[in-house]
Every structure is written in C-alpha cells, then in structure tokens.
Length: 119
Image (cartoon, rainbow, N blue to C red; front, side):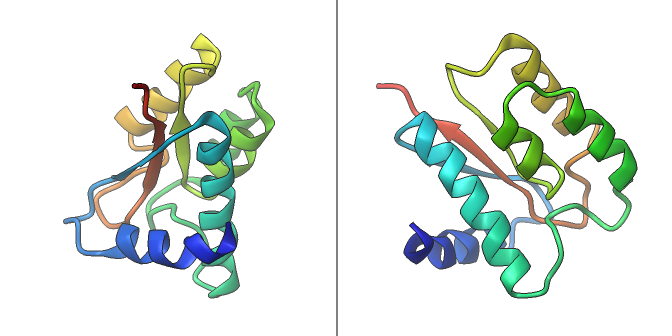
C-alpha cells in the first residue's frame, strides 16, 4: 500500500485553497490503511503533520483520546480524519465536529479526509 501513498499524497497536496481534501476509498480497511500511509509518508518527508499552523496540538490530542477507534486516534493527531459506516456514532460526530470547528483543519493547510464509499 505504500506504493499508493505518494500518488495519494501528491493529489492531496495539489492546490485546494487550503480546504480539506476528501479521498474516497472502497472499504473501511482501506480508509484506515490509507490514513496511516498518508501520515507515515508525510513524516518520512520530514514535513510534520497535516495540522495547520494555528492548530492547538494539545487540544487535538485531548480530542483524539476520546475516540474509540485506535487508528482514528492515531491519525487525528496528524490532522487526518476518516469516516465509514462502521464508525461509532460518537467517533463520527467527533470527527465531523473537529472539522466544523477547524480543530483538524484550518485555512492554511491541506487535510486529507477519507470516506468509505458505499455502493
């Protein structure tokens, strides 16, 4: 899957006027793996996280600790969120609230948001 990390990362980093980027993937597992791959790839480039410059990392970390899904806890601290139909209602609401209140998204950074497509 790391072979896909670079193309997905490059697509996320294309100019988007600082708005979040939504990446659609075919499954719940793919959402989790792609989020981890994006986080790891960015870290390998020594570019830090996807959190914006004004993001409060301690506030993001505190919010991440409240999440039930371990993978989501890990990637949220890097400024990446994902949702899928198997996510608990509390986690779903938490991720969407973090976006709404710009906790994991602000106007000066790119932020990948992964969503599992249902067909």
